[in-house]
Length: 491
Image (cartoon, rainbow, N blue to C red; front, top):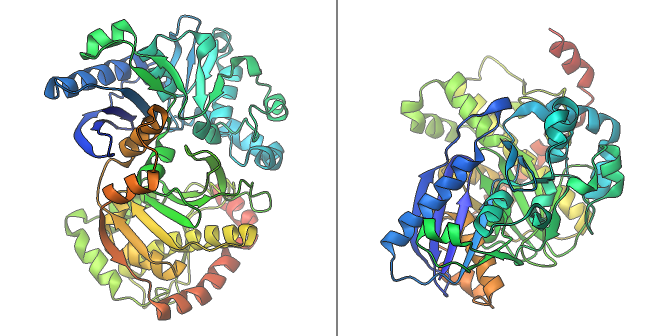
């Protein structure tokens, strides 16, 4: 049996999986988000919750023999540890915007260089820069900077600071590496010493064994192998079964992530739009287009619709509006464009007329995320000269049938909605199973366990209309509106 642990932004999920990849038992706990100094999160409390969660699982499954343990965690954010594996500062999560000014400065001066080397944006890298510049007395006590899941694995296995590691999938939000390892060029740009960076491990590497203390507190046997694991986004993509070239995933969560599976490792140097992330599977890569569709959807419901109790009416009325929302375009950049980086642009509606109403605004918003996805897809095709043959959709936004259909129509690709499962836990179980030699045919394991809840066949007529509208969207999006936005932002 495999024990899989997912440490999410707000929820902790623990699952038991057998040798067929079937989820035998699951438990969910709330991640304790206890604030400490400088808006950090008490990571020892998170670790205690992991241990108590494992203990709860094992008390319900006393006859189960765990062969291997896998852990994943949210990929944004860092922890600084000392020689004794104590948190010099607690978990600094991505929602803590302490790094934002540093990131803007770094991207303005060296964003292109960093992108061309790493294929990414140095979110965690500039978090490290914040601690060095703003909290140097704390920074000087840090032996290694690691991820949330890396800290938990180290606690479970009683690691030393010299053994601290980062898995290869989690490199993408650090923005400090090239295709081989830590990049001296980027580290020099950010004035970060490579001495404070952990070792880089493959996801399936066994990095330690369960310590006596952790075993005692969880009702497990000591000595169980623990793998390096992966980041939660990588785990969810793998768990949804996107492992072959030409497959894509729509993670419709707080962030709207359109991920494309590729067998070719490349960096989007011309557009700085597709972010490179290694897959947990060797020689496989995920190219990610990221925006904040889910967060903006919540903003729309709370601030413009303001009638969450009758949410279904909003969808049904918007469904009646033709493609293009009768000549409205929306740019979905509340707070700026994440990719390509542009801090000045803002959310904007173009083309408002007397005939337009709330439902036009809503549908144009839904369409805007589809246009962003089409932009990511076109960049992929131009670089790789290959097409996508299917899109799997997961996450809370996948329950919006209208949104699924709109995105399928805009892309011209059929959508498959997967049933609601803990895909991070599934992906981490697959990684651990590969490490233990339990799984040898991933395609078979995935096929036997994947549940497709609904299909969305794209409408060819709508697709033709959307292709024309997209050209207008692209023209507006690519116009140099920076001066206008900069003037507005001065007020």
